[in-house]
Image 1 (cartoon, rainbow, N blue to C red):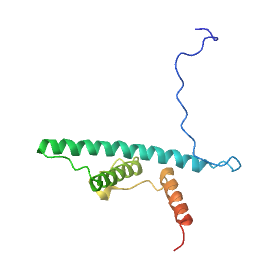
Image 2: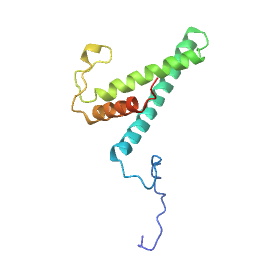
Image 3: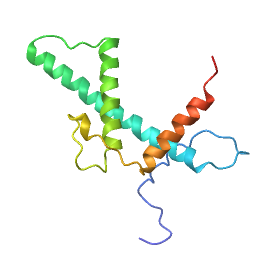
Image 4: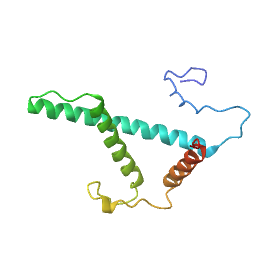
Length: 130
């Protein structure tokens, strides 16, 4: 292949950047938070789909129909968020057992934990006063 030949494979698309104003200073932590939240929501969606499939399989095995109402969807979403949050926060904890809450010990120096705390503090600061 010569250097004049165009590549035959397409380049992967860059992920969308978070919205911002061109005049604002670049906020590295905000960009990181955007990507972390995107990856978190993608992981939650994958776990929720797995839970939905498991509900359908169990209902089929029992000879009934799977509950697919709003309450069941909300329950699956809450379980999925709990699973993903626990897994992410304990990713450096070799003793973590999801079935045993006493083993939940996220690393206090984990940058992800610091980012989550920072985001929570900003949410509280930006919340409207009652």
